[in-house]
Length: 257
Image (cartoon, rainbow, N blue to C red; front, side, top):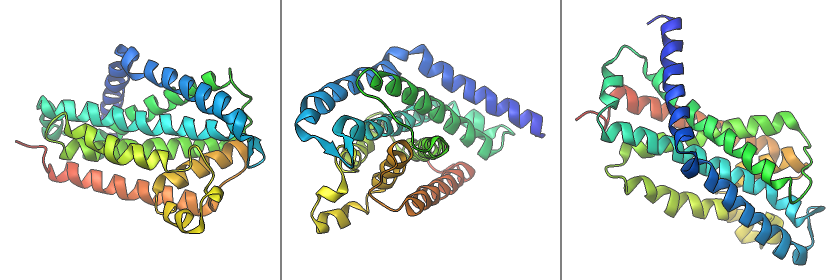
């Protein structure tokens, strides 16, 4: 395939992905807005007023970047894992594998779909947050970079989960038993400075700590970890996940019947 044909294939997959989650917006977009509104009310207004400041900001301002990132992570992941597993379950993915479309174009199409949903949900959640607090932006370019890298990373992880899943129940195991605990323990609701030294050190093996800290630095200018190291960790994870995902597509492992 030439470059133009690859572009057409990529855009076809991307449009299909966008139309899929927009068609069921009440299940893919609305829940995030409702859930984050509850978080803002409970943690921001009710509990936050008792906690006071954190890192020089009100608790509400401190927690909003973490909540935005949590929405990006869950939606980017969920979009790809559900969509690709559905294609795998219906055997329609085999049509892609036997087509002349390069594996990386297929992968990029699904990942771009996950990124688009993650970014759209981020915009929705951010808009909702403005009804509860002001939202300073310390470094806009860093915010865009972290959002993009995080959406790509968790879209790739969703793709890997979809490849190895055998049933629809399997695609819920990682979000429930891995992703959710890591998110809640990733510094979304608290600063690592509040933890004893031992638990602060243990927390640094959690990849979500680097994602949340980098994004919070972009928004507020404060971070629990070194910014350069956090960005390096995210980039390394993206490269590894992309390489492994591409390997799974090339080999057709667990994809061909």
